[in-house]
Length: 113
Image (cartoon, rainbow, N blue to C red; front, side, top):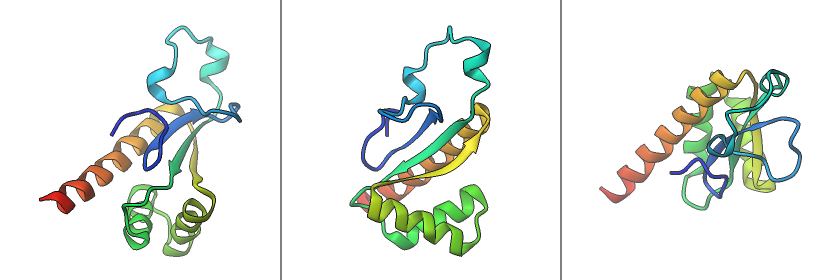
């Protein structure tokens, strides 16, 4: 799974960006300190592959959300095409995205193997 925003992916974007969220791989390393201090968002996009129950479980494990909150986010992804799961410091956002990618990769490997 790539860092590029697309269906079925998780991305990290600065919250000030309202159109065309920018993924981590596209961030310029020469940003000002002011830009780096802005909150970052973890955004999960819909995909036609993973079961809703699996997505709910992943949200619970990665973010520590109670089942009800995880289900609300899952339904938002399902109905609206995406959900902002978390907002905060860049390093934590990158960790969450890596964990989400790990679960998506695991689910893919289980389906093909």
